[in-house]
Amino acid sequence: MPVDLIIFDCDGVLVDSEVISCRAHADVLTRHGYPITSEQVLVRFLGVSEKDARLMVEREIGRSLPGDLEQQISAATLRFYASDLQPITHVAAAIGAIDLPKCVASSGTPEKITHGLTCAGLYDLLAPHIFSASQVARGKPAPDLFLFAATQMKVAPERCLVIEDSVPGVTGAHAAGMTVLGFHGGSHCPPGHAERLRAAGAGLTFDDMRQLPELVRRVALDTLAG
Image 1 (tube, rainbow, N blue to C red):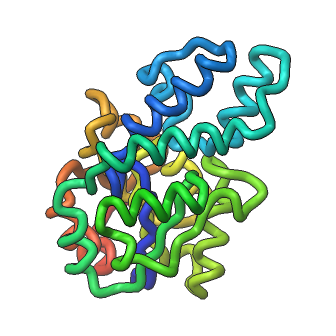
Image 2 (image 1 turned 180 degrees about the vertical axis):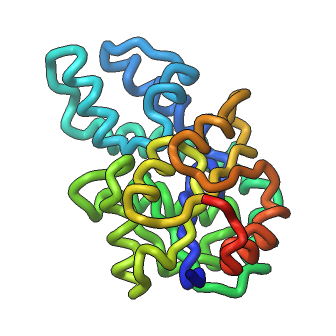
Image 3 (image 1 turned 60 degrees about the vertical axis):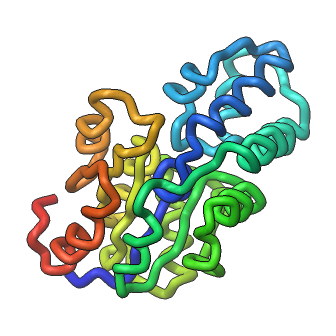
């Protein structure tokens, strides 16, 4: 089946932001009486929307967190972005080398996605086709966001190729009936992450964005065993 659309996750695929986001998330949760380290946030909430992460914590502690918690996390993240955020190495060249329609489907808020891509110098390469979990009922690992992106881009799910770095993201894309490549080259990826992505449904994994254009070509020629 030909590939008609490339769907990129944002954090950990386009921008090397997961470590920064986890630090902001941990700072805010700890301040509100839920002590947690950035490493623990990474393990528990990688690829999960801030809304869903909040619900998980509230169920655990048996009380509500502040109504503006997501806004507090986003504000803290944006402050760190301004000084620390970098694009994933070689991703801009990879995007430019792939002559197919592209979009972004991220668990982040629209403001966070836009600010991150702008700080990393990638926004103009992908705008305006940028979609957030805030636009659907269920975030990753549900397939809703990927199906929404495909509908907006007018492409059948089976003709979409998703680039993801998290187990929830791979799970959601796989559930949407899409082919998934698992990227494990971000600074947040621990040893064994590639195996976890493959177990979740990634057809192939890679850790260098210079590999991506050739992998896309292979998938388009239906030579990837999935």
